[in-house]
Length: 520
Image (cartoon, rainbow, N blue to C red):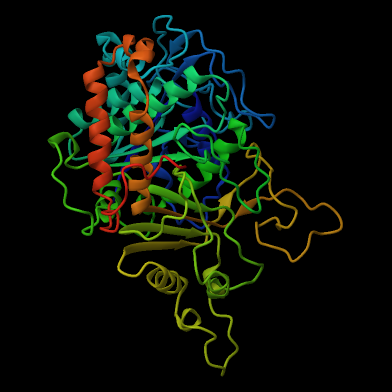
């Protein structure tokens, strides 16, 4: 048995993504049982409840509802209270759980109020909060409560805001987890909203510096770290947000953008939640530790750091009754997915290792060629959807180490998940040739294809971020450092970013000029 995982949500945007994710968990049917419910949920209660510790600012996102997230004014720090840990029934819910799910989802989170700290703008502010012995003690108590009730703890999922001071909170929390639970998996997702800081140079610069410090520190304390956002770039220059062809997503709304990330997260984490597999969080991390990564002398703090990029096709383009080989053959040159790990250069191709999950495509219809006729393609000759997907990946990513899983269970998208889908989709998320004359019912589910990749695009992301931060005049931003970060530590983090980026080189970057990103 792979065991259970404890989830931590750190920050307001992480709370939005987490709220949608728990909503997806609640709406998913229990049969067929392809995903092990007990990995993330406490199944001894009915309905099952998340094994969740959530930290956010008081007055934060509130309940997620169809109209979007609540007011994001922040006046004090708190752990959203759901109920005290113990033997009584849980009757109240975390503030960031969807309204429509409050009857089905409740959490056991910390209920103490921290000092009045305004909004957490800087990395150092977040770090300093976790230096309060009383706060650390209560966090440890809540973690121990969940850990002790697990039959076997496989690790921790950490959803963390990357753009604000919660990156500093996440750095200290993951350090604590790394120290206290050595050998357990720590999968950290650094999340950034699309909301623009155009015209506010201070917020934009703070976002950039928080992101740089966050990636350097979070990755050093995690088994696997993945930055995720619909932003076009984590750098200083704005880029168009990620867009999906069959989703009418207003990326500036946290309610929309976090829903996309939640669907991706629910799919990407499937490998360590499968009923049919003993795969664990650590196993997933190990499969992405690719042998082709460049050997780089790295400081001890970065010796095991692993940063990966996320991709998703939402929904995966398939027509009703279409076989998987038919759907894949429609995209012979490139997988029809979008990069969810912001990088201004999105044409970087290839990968060293990847974990791919396809869900929502029926396994029974994997063969569409007529009996007695030769297969239409090598993919049609495959005996299963798993074999067809693996062969497709091998063709497009020759030499890469690819693991893949195919699930019949789709991603369920009932409200409060936003109904932002194209009229070209059926209720099951499959493509129509033309929109129906009359509006159809809501899209109840969609097929999703998602992947985690250890790939050269990680190098591009890290290198671009490093160069953008290097261009800053740190002396102009003394207020950022006054929050608790020493400039020497900041420079050290930047060097760690650069060193980490070098591990993802392919060998073709040797002739690049020093100003490779200046013209972007």
